[in-house]
Image (spheres, rainbow, N blue to C red):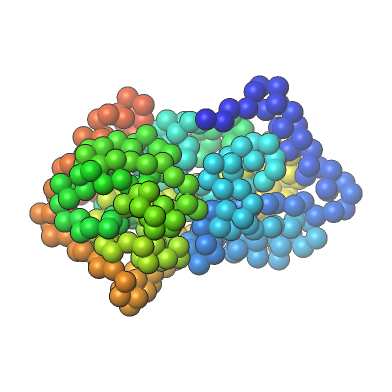
Length: 333
C-alpha cells in the first residue's frame, strides 16, 4: 500500500500549489490533467468531457483540461499516488478506493444498503457532504459525487441463489468490504485492476465480477461472461477529487468558477447515469452473447440475507450512526 513520507508529501504539496500560481503569472493556462480508468461512453467518461468543455469555454486561455480515459495515463494502482505527487490534478476513483485514507467511506461498499439512487442522493446531500472533506489532511479534497449506478453480478454459470456463487473466483476492487461480501457467499474474492478484468475473465483467472451495466457493456464483458444476475446489490459511485494544495493554490476566481462548473456537471452526470445504464443493458440483450437473470423477490431477499452480516463487521470502522443515516435515506414505509 503506497504511503508518502511526510517530507515527500510536504514537497509535493508545495509543488502542486506553486504550479497554478506559476502558470497564472506567466500568462500560460493552468493545466488540469483529469485521468480515469473507464471508457468515454460511461457516466464518468461523459462527465470528464463535459467538465473539460465548460471549463475551457468559461475560462478561455486561463484553464486547459486534458482528459485521459481508459487508464491511458495512470491505472487503478498508481492514480492516487500520481495525484498526491502532483502528476495529475483530478481523478474520479470509485468510492471503494478510499479505505486507506478514511474508513468512513467504506459505507458506500456495504451491500444492499441503498434501495435506489434517489436514496443515495438523499444521503450524499446530507451526511455524505462531510465525507468529501474527510481526507484533506492527507492531501485529497473531494469536489463532488458522480453516480455510475447499481451493481449486477456476472459469472460463467447462472447465479440464482447465493449458494450458486460458492467456490467461484470473483474480481473485486481493493476494498475490504467487497472482499467480505464475497466471502459471505463462500466465494473467493480476487483483487484486480479494472483494466485487467476482460482478460482475467477470458482466461479464467476469475470466474465472475460485479459492476454496472455501462461498465460491462463498454468493456465488452458480455463477450466473456455467459450470465448476468440483475441483483442491484451495491453501488458504484465516484468521488471527483483533486490535490488539496493544488486546489487551494488556484486564483480565487478560477477556483470559484471551477466549483460552479463541477456542481453543474455533477447534476448532469447523475441525471444521465441511469439512462446510460439502461441503454447499455439493452445493448447486452441485443448482442445475444449472454443471459440476464431477473431475480424473484424471494431470491433477492436470499442474497440480501446472505450479505447483510457484512454491515456489522464494519460498523465500528464506519460508525453505527452513519450506517443508520444511510439506511434511513431509503425512507422505507
